[in-house]
Length: 149
Image 1 (cartoon, rainbow, N blue to C red):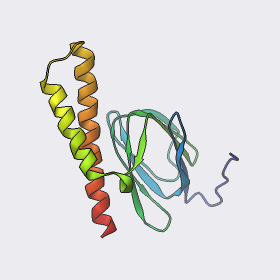
Image 2: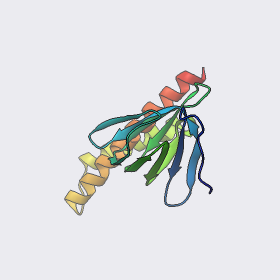
Image 3: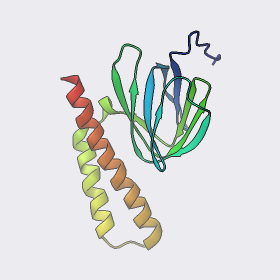
Image 4: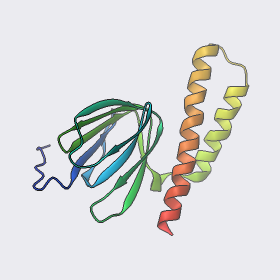
């Protein structure tokens, strides 16, 4: 894909990529991403940055002031000039989350945390990640639902 040339510096170009695809690519005005040690807010003119991302909700504001949400599953954010690249294991548009499935995932993760496991440390860590993903997916679906009404 060709480089995007922004003329007046009032927009950012966002690309969200997973190992299997480009999930989203568009010009935006701002975003807030779930950084490893706290949320990262990005406006045009932001300093260059490379940082880890945690499981969490990313909100994006488009030029028409529409707000959209993505659930991210660990990864990296790179900010260079007015280009933002998100590399993540998975990224899910909050409007496409099935709330019932997310709630079922939450129950399964809670059961895994409380139940017996083979490799105790590995299973507990994976279960904690699954629990966090489920909680974020539920919150994202509910948040997205509010804005669609």
